Image (tube, rainbow, N blue to C red; front, side, top):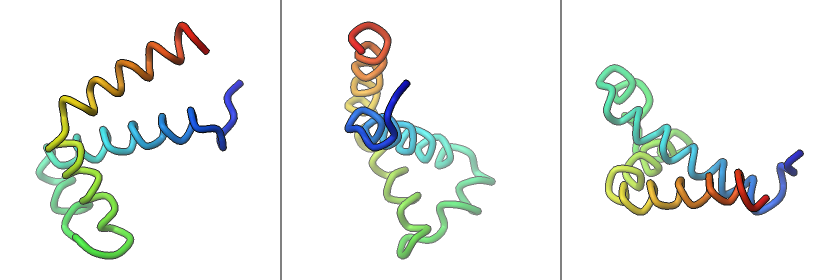
Length: 74
């Protein structure tokens, strides 16, 4: 059982959030609906999508490392 407030849980949530927002940026209907605002609360989705698309190699490596950590080490 994982703890929500552990560093592992926060890292997994952050990686999933960035990956999901980067996927939303690729879908035209979702991009106009969710990623149109660049400021405020909705701007967090836009900023996560930008991080996911610009740093796609680093995010992919981080996801693989986190999956290995959760499956085999933890």
